Image (cartoon, rainbow, N blue to C red; front, side):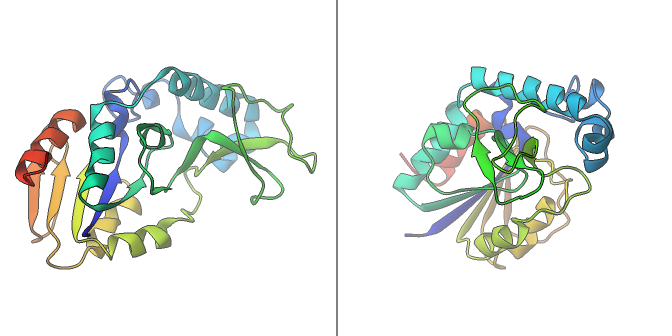
Length: 228
């Protein structure tokens, strides 16, 4: 069975009601990124950081996977599918996809501030400084903040290097190091990019652009690949 690798970004979840950062009206219009999503922010005002992620987490608990998520799950009937996502939501998981690597962390998890190996699943949307790990240290969002390294990037590059087909969906391909993953795909791998705003890709690769939102773009992909 051929391996199909999916690289998904914020546009993948937009139809589910997850607000994106960079679109008009996005979250960065309300918050200064360095005040809510950086190690410095956590040091200076952890309560504001918790407020920001609590708002996002509450929204996530109220959202559901969209048709695009479900069609990616359906791809597993035809391919060995592995998802590498920049998204911190769990909508791929809730749609039933089985192999998912989160590059930038997971919103429904928290981790210890003294031992990064201590990661906890959250069953509520609120997290505060009173919530502590088993070692007595406050919990922080299990998110890769600006200025932090992306621990999963090497694993992601290895996954992409094995792709027979690469699907890039809902991402501007402007955020590094994730945007550089396209370069790890084997030379002759067909690449499909689904996004209503066609990203600029400086490459001579075999790329098919589908300029649609995730759900519509996925329907067109099924037609192109002659899948049912």
